[in-house]
Length: 407
Image 1: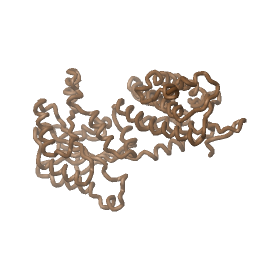
Image 2: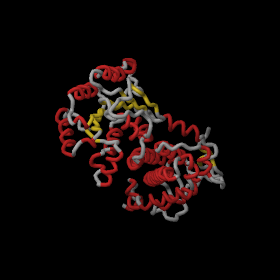
Image 3: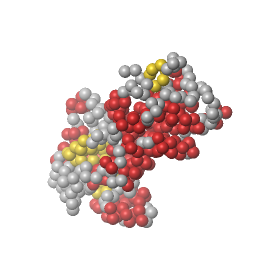
Image 4: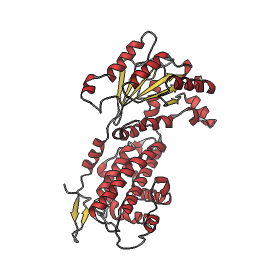
């Protein structure tokens, strides 16, 4: 199916009516690879609680009073991530639990076929803060995992059982025993303790959720990061930073390349040329990165509107022209690479904001079922987001094109 068609002046314009939006969405989804993350540690250390707290409630079964509820390895297959909750190490059963873990890590078929998608990509190793010491067994297991060139993050859990000095001492002990592993974080899922930390203004000092998530993203291959980010529970600031710095930046750079390949684009760009298909794909990538589900046909219907003119064309262009101050009200001008990058970046940032606002609105409306995204992504909401981005370009990594042009 053709993405472009010719107008009466024989210029290529975006064929928004015949563009295969479902195929475009499929391409976006197919490009996202699922990361496989394994969570290990002693029995009752809180692995399942950690999984539920980071990735969503009631993913893993949680035990009480330090009793393990996991035998062998439980795999939780999400839409964009696979989590492996391992059997806890118990006195007398350490070797049994370790055997389950290394049978998975040593899968000969995957190693022989260099099966990137099914291998374990990260291990989160939990240490029980209540023990107040770093066991030789834990050291040995962590070293065995590291010997397989798998990134390992150490998470000290149940920190509500430690004083601040004890927590510092435990971190220092682990760092001394394993100097090659700088990734040692503290965490708690005890809701009362967390509230006390927040009330005292010291939550982030002890519960290092953001640092853990950042570590996890940084140690995943680029192809896997787009699967990890949508799986997160909350962490809106981290999602925004990732989407702006990675997804939006990627499509903005591609937009510059499109302009180079097509020589020039007229402004205002009503039903604009190759940039538009790229921007539609970017929009779908951003929406997917937020884990938002929507009826694509209804969503596109909202954007096209009743006038028969694509919103991503004339209406959006009229809003984005003010992003390019040196053009002003000029009827026709050449869009160079800087302008194309700025326009695409501004659009991406605006869609990112709308998605973020939507998730917050869902909380107020008791879930996405009561507020379809296709009803939220309106012309007015996108206009407001674009206006905000224009006033805060530097916060979104968008250059001031008029300064560049006049320099």
